[in-house]
Image (cartoon, rainbow, N blue to C red; front, side):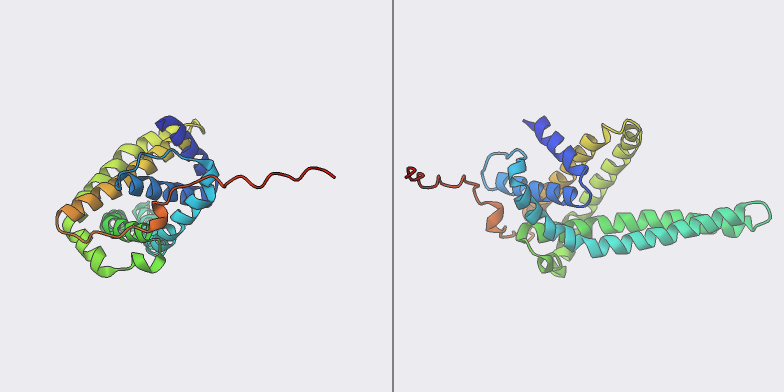
Length: 229
């Protein structure tokens, strides 16, 4: 039943901010349960609020680092604009080229450097369901040391492959949403795979939050209605 789940995730992408958080929460619950011997759980809109709760902490934990990255990227874009302006007729082409290269290389290097730390703090915040839990710098350092290069290369490869596909799909205004859901699925699958690899290499095994493993049960039926008088 993968495709219904992907379409549900695609619908989540239509909901600003909240939708992606819900998708994150679903992935943490699904992949955590799979690693504890449970069957794969299809997306269930009846559990929308629960998914939102599970996804909130990893989203908030990664937000400060993401904001810093965005600021640096904007600075790089400004350098690019200045560089292109200087390379134009009447400017200084050498200085312009240097600024352009600095902007491009700086944004690429920053993106690659941040992949593993963001993955580590996002994963720990989601696994333990807490903002502060994500900022265990000993775990982040150990995670980056043991599996940082691997997860960086894999995610960078996914980005390289997916970018032209997403650009083409964006012109359809339809396929972009299921493809975004599939891409998010792949990214979080990589997070959990590299956590498994991290533990195999002697890393800290986390005690996942019990609410991620809890079974959802239907509410018991209420008492029978009293007969009308």
